[in-house]
Length: 258
Ligand code: GCO
Image (cartoon, rainbow, N blue to C red):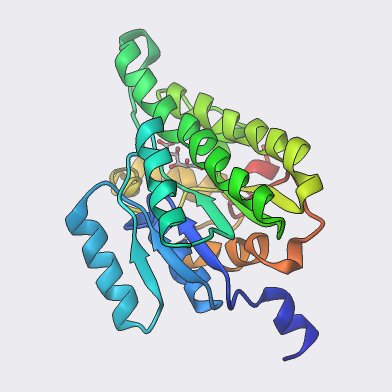
C-alpha cells in the first residue's frame, strides 16, 4: 500500500460515533467504514439504530450498535464497561450527538437550555473521558473528533443554547488536546456549515432562509453530508498525527467572509 494510502487507511481501527444512526453522524460513520474502520453506532432509538446497522451490514461494513444515553453518566460508563467485557477498544471517537432548539432566549426555559447543553456539550466530555481513559491505559494513542458548528465561533439569533454548547465544544477540544496529546491522542473538531440534514430541512424549505444561506456562503450552496467525508477521515487517520486542538470548518467559506 502506498504511503499516502497508508496515511488515510483505517483498517484495524474501531470507531464509535455518537448519534451515528442518522443525519451527519450516519454519513460520517459511513465514511469511516469506507476507509476500513469497524463501526460502533450509538443512538437512542432502537429502531433507527437497527435500520442503520442493517444498511451498514448490507454494504459489507463491520458494524455493531451500542445504545446508550450520551447525557447520562451512568449510561455512558455502563456502555464502555460493555465494550471492556467484549475486549472492544475504541480507537476513534466521533462526538457527534446533538440536538437543536430554536427559540428566543427570553422565552427559553432553563430545562430546554439544559437539555441542549447536556446533549451537545456535556456528552462530549462524558464519552470523551471514558474513551480517553482507555486510550491512555492501552498506550496506543487514539483519535477524538468533536462535532462543532459555525456557531462554535459565530452566533445566530434564537439558537443560544446550541451556540453556547458548540462554542464549548471548540474549547473542550482544545482542553482535550492540552491534556491528552502527550498520550498520542489527537483531539480535533469539525465545524460543519449549513448542511442539508433532517435538522436543517425546515430551514432549507424556507425560501428566505434558503436564499440567505446561499447568499451568505461563498460556495453559494448548502453543504452535503458527503462534503464531510474527507475531513472526518483525515482527522481520524494517521494523516493528522500532528494536528491537535483544531476546529476545521467545512462551511463553503461562510465563516471567512462578512
Ligand atoms: C440554525 C442551524 C445551525 C446549523 C449549523 C451551522 O438553526 O442556525 O441549525 O445551527 O445547523 O449548526 O453550523
